[in-house]
Length: 104
Image (tube, rainbow, N blue to C red; front, top):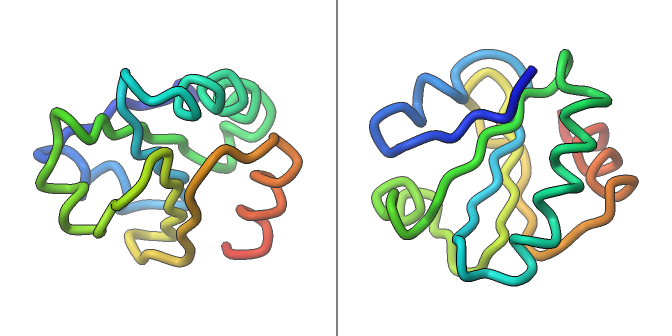
C-alpha cells in the first residue's frame, strides 16, 4: 500500500479503519527528512497490515492542534480510529516496528 498524504479534511477518514501509523512532519524538519525513507521501507514491508499516513503540520494545522503536536516528527498509532500510542523524534525501522507491535 502506498503512503497516503492526508489533510485536515481527509484525516478522520484515513484513520477510521485498521492499524494506521500517522507521521506529523514538515518540509523544513531535518529529522522528518531522516525518517521519510524509513517509513518508505516500513510501508514496503508491512504496508498490507499497517497503513502509513503523513500529515504536513504547516498545511494542516487543525489536525496538528487537535492531537497537540508540539514537536516533529511525531508518530501516532491509531487502531480503527482510536489513538493507541504517540511518540516523537526519529526512530530506526526496528524501533518503529516494535512501537507498532507493542501498541496495536
